[in-house]
Length: 80
Image (cartoon, rainbow, N blue to C red; front, side, top):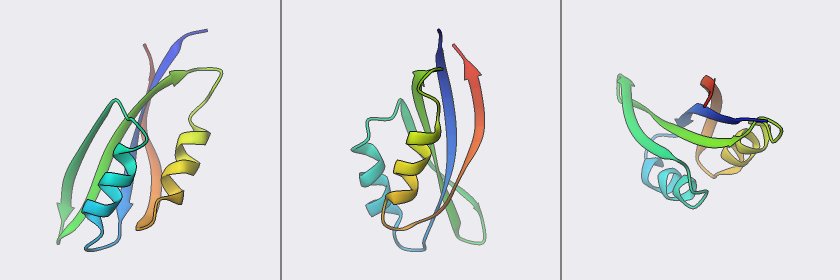
C-alpha cells in the first residue's frame, strides 16, 4: 500500500471564494491555491495526500459538500 497525492480543481460560485477557501482549509489539505481561469472565474486547486486504499472519493464528496462549491474534478493523481 502506498500514498497517493490527488489534486482537485474546485469551481466556486462568484463571491464565495473566501468562504469556500476557509471551508477547505478546515479539511487540512496538503496545499491550496486560488487560480483565475479567465473572465473573472476562479478555481481553487487543492491537494490531499492519502493512502491508495482510502481513495479520493471521500475527499471529493467532502469538497462538494462545502457551501459555494459548484463542481469538483480530479485534475491529477499520482503515487508518492
